[in-house]
Length: 418
Image (cartoon, rainbow, N blue to C red; front, side, top):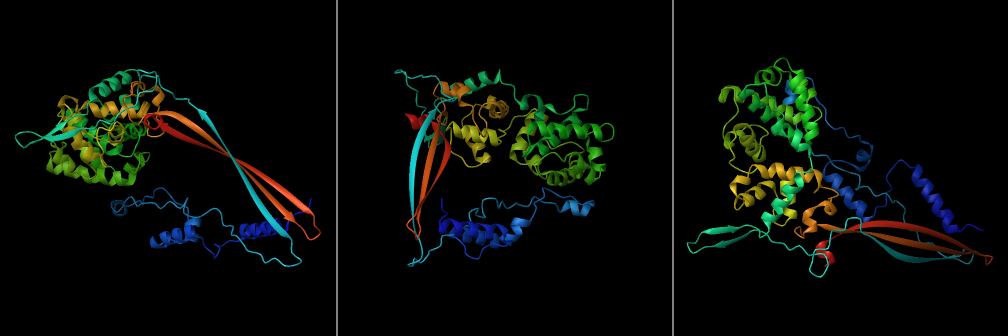
């Protein structure tokens, strides 16, 4: 079988491109757009491709440690196009062969339901979950009243029931459990504050490892305000190296220690405002610290789990955790303010995962209470057949067939199926 001239030319161009150590001058529109994005950040495509990104670097002097910051990293993985081939027009003459390319596509859909809940409607069909967010109205006195979601109590009780059998990392390694029991009340409060400062952007299991290293590798009696004041910043950074953004957290902890010594008598602040005035402490840490360290529940600690899950339930539509906190505090009974964080964090770690939610194991999906429940996963198989027909000068016809199969998975919610 003869090889078409087009195939030879294509192979030749591909070989030249693979051996070249430069970016082709001709640019597609998407490549030009990505190039402009890199130029705006002061990075060329060649530099981005050859630069090895390091996670974090720490100098061995305190002056350089104080200037550490978390610089945003630029992801170039999807910016540089992987397909650098370009179409070429050929002028056909009397002595050149004619080439005809025909494409035939066939699509097949395969349906699979590995996570199908129990049918709970009166007619045996899956019950559609309705969005029932909190609503506000104005009473006769002209005051704004917030009415809670209609089904919030049933959702809340179902989650509590599921959490009884689902042990989560937060149950054994949460920030409230990491302070050592044999220490004084003041030192236990300090350890709770440090655990919360380390917990940002860090898993509970990793945070527990860092806390244990501080408690055991610092001089006796371990993790105390006095030892944090005395420890070298480089040594402190080595001890908490496993947590996310450890450079910044080292700087925050070292800056917080003298504030506690000079302004709070060696203890931690006893108010939300005082806690939020400390470096690296935000609203979530402050409210959780008030509950765990001082036993005072004055607000809801809203982290990514609470923010994400309550929005999935359509209790509200918020864009930031602090906005979620204000919405929840407007109607949620005060006696539940302390437990809701622990409840939903564990639920988000075991069942309602950020990626790959286990809706088939969730009572909310079975009862038709979650409008975001995934009840079906479809596999879509696309088969593409490409035929290339080349006709040479001598009238001989060469035929080449290529077949590719692509499988895509698509999630479907209850609302989509009904």
